[in-house]
Length: 195
Image 1 (cartoon, rainbow, N blue to C red):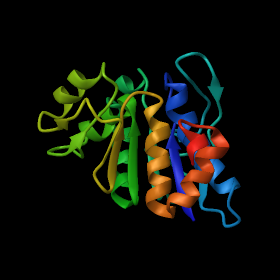
Image 2: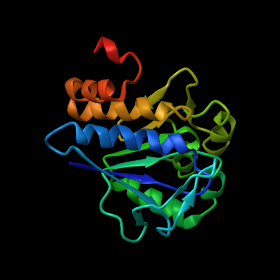
Image 3: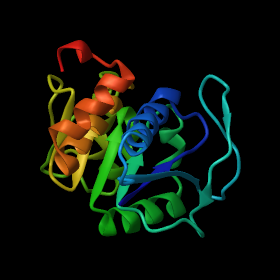
Image 4: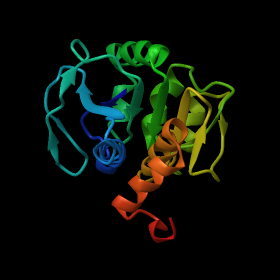
């Protein structure tokens, strides 16, 4: 079983974290063997508020969360503030170093870009964030034509709904086509009837 930790912060984009949360949770629900344990984390464990006002109480704080195999860093305008917080950057760096996969959605790519983790790597993000990402990581290789980019241990997804696509890609990569197709059919996502 892989532990999936989703970092939450104020002014986060709702679907950036809710989409991946749904994919990994549904995949576990549909299989007898629990494949993923999904939980959320904020820096202090306190309530956060999304861009559009939804309040969420995370499961853990930086100080008490379980080990993370798959780290998800969502986006939203709140990433502008998060990249200025040393404790957030330090935590992200440490978790990414030990995680099997670090995945970003939308402007969540700002955090690994600021840490130098995307230097000389292909990446994507929300179309309005390309200039910001290039400023943070001048050596990044930006690809506006890809929905997501898989660099092995670090992966980036484009804007908002692309986090669902990358999450499904990770499920397929770790557990195969039959498992991911079951999830897609249950979620009625994309061209699900053809599976």
